[in-house]
Image (cartoon, rainbow, N blue to C red; front, side):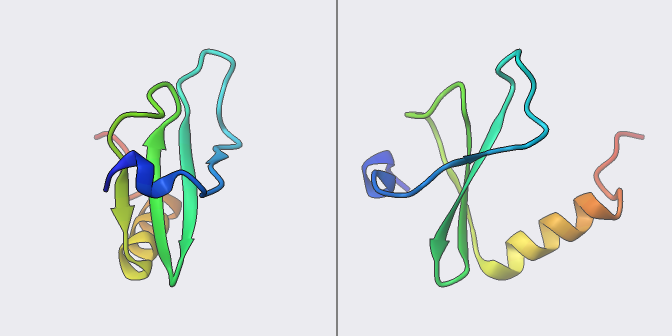
Length: 69
């Protein structure tokens, strides 16, 4: 997805963001689609998820499935 396609979306910074700038931003695009980017590189790559993919990701994080062994 090109950055210019996301020009009008509202990006929300993670509430867990610290002052060091290591942040993730999310945008809800409508129709259940979600975009994710690195706040330090707003012109950089953007990951885009379907509603099902986003739900699976959030559930995995909530259940601790993504913890480092």
